[in-house]
Image (cartoon, rainbow, N blue to C red; front, side, top):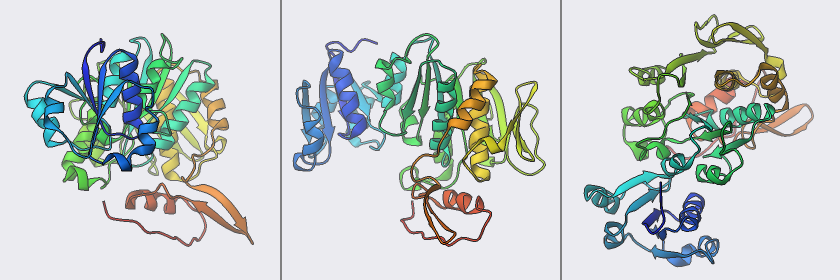
Length: 362
């Protein structure tokens, strides 16, 4: 894809928008950054683009600017606007940041994409750690941390044999038309972001798009215990692998729990001791199953998977032990921003607990 000389409108002046603006300007595009907030609320963000040849359209969305674009790139936190819909109706391409990034990834690099209402960050970080343990160049980011997927393009992992591991939120899949993950993981689907998507059906469909452009030799990894997830597997073009943490569950192709071991059938059977992991709770066993299937499915050696699992440490604010006093342990789980996430964390504790919770209904 050639951006040289093209007029590109980047919608949203936050972390992803800034990264996309720099990326496009570096490749010779005429970049306009649009944001509904006024300039005085975006001074810090604008400073990050000092010296970068971009023009700003702030304090409102100017239809003329959008209709003059040759490409519009949406930041994940920005919903569809009347102006972007009008541009699309005129044949101007509107894409997500991950779609733009995908078009610049080396065709022989392996992309692993992980989505789901809950567990996607832990699954992404753990998968990245297992990939790193293999010794192959690895990028781990997307919706995780401070590494938008567009940063993978100039990363050492964007080479033949490189591994690109990306957390992908539902927002990010909205404007994708070719985005294809060699391995696509859907951890679960529970009520969330209905303020944006309106219905569970639309939200679930957006999550299921992670598999839309896969091919028969690609892997789809799905939660067998989640009816919303399994509904999205209908008609997918790729090979389906499932995981199931319910007592007594098995899988012909995928992963399940057997006592204190995670069992993989890929085919052939492999067993991974649960006590090699520092993360706790049934929901984290599901995250580990996803990571094990994903990495073994692309040929990461078993020894590397086990070494990576032993080296992994939990992400901040996700069941993070932050202190203890008088045999009372304090955990920070502030990334639990919906009911299902909090319930999964509570169920993961083997001892009595006091829950301090709050927030808003999404």
